[in-house]
Image (cartoon, rainbow, N blue to C red; front, side):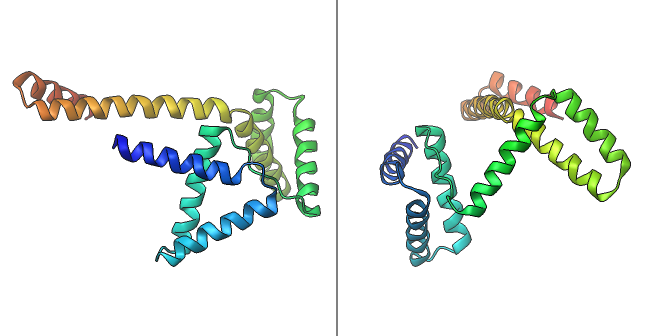
Length: 172
């Protein structure tokens, strides 16, 4: 496992060296080549695209890579509109947004529901970092538990078996 992880880290570093500093068009061209190469090796297009996303996400988390943004007029217009929306909602706290969202949902008409969805997305965006940190902590804890359970299962001693049964009973 360690050798595989090391090899994966080297491949991620190589990919990062290729994609860093590229503009959006060049980045998408590299993506296209990557996906085409995987499809040539008998992967499905969906599987190749998912692999690309996983590799890019590892570059984002491991090397602080920032994905290039599209510079098309439509993408710039949407980014500006989103920035205005975020700035407009910045004056409200999370509790206020949630309360406002609830009142809009209680109305039930289409416009209110759309506005409530926007407010929900804003609250989620604001709390994304803390949610990600919680997920990482939970994953680390689960990994430790799994490792310990595997160690106990391999040990096969009476006290190890007793601990495993106790854990099984706690988990229901």
